[in-house]
Image 1: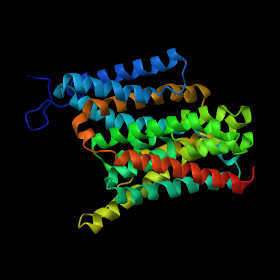
Image 2 (image 1 turned 180 degrees about the vertical axis):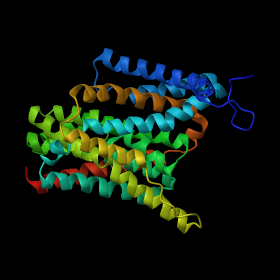
Image 3 (image 1 turned 90 degrees about the vertical axis):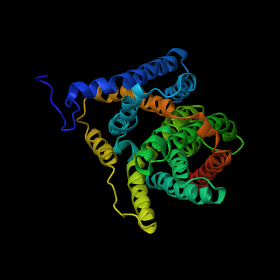
Length: 344
């Protein structure tokens, strides 16, 4: 038939056929994401993470209906390109000026908690028999910014879908426990509002968990906790680049090719941070990113849930959960010692 291009193998090419293949899976993921964000907003509970709701919804759908091949192309697009775009525009929410205002001591603490937690995750994972990819996901999720770091890290380590799902569940559980426990410990530990905020911002996994826990200490704690958490988010890109180098080196040691794949989405993330730090980005663009990022992240994680077989998830056992708990205790301890040494 005239007017239809071909890819040389008898298959139609062009945007029309591609969009038709992507549409079913993408529409399902976006629908789940919209409902997840709406539930968080309607409930008024900030700690009700739409990413977690979307993950649970995707898992429930997969359990009820099984694998649906018609969705596969859209799910793959949501897990890779859509997610990378979300990470890039996440950079619009972090400014270098805010982070530098913390001072050298607090900035050093942010670097230390990330620099220790991620390698510790891989080392402890080996002792516990946790696969290296899953251990890396747990380390990055604990050390940097929870679900966002996990799904971003998987662009480099390429863990199995069930490993990513398990890591998201563990990080959500541990971070929620921290959200409840840290405010109860501020008084007994004798922390000032500023110190407590820095501790919460340096310890907890998700941005909303860190900000929520810090806010329990008052306005000063909320401000210091939020900025400390943003300092950790800024480390997402360099940490992913370092992890990519580590993965390539491991491949070379195993007889593979030692080619370092540059995670360009991480580079673009830093570019967005630099751009927004100039003050030239319109406020409406920044607010649009605050709306779009949770929606796109939720859609990507919904795709992950729709792609995950729960039987494979159960086969991982309790060792990754133990690793996640150990890492959460480690980062909270390092952060507390660091805040004490800073002397704020």
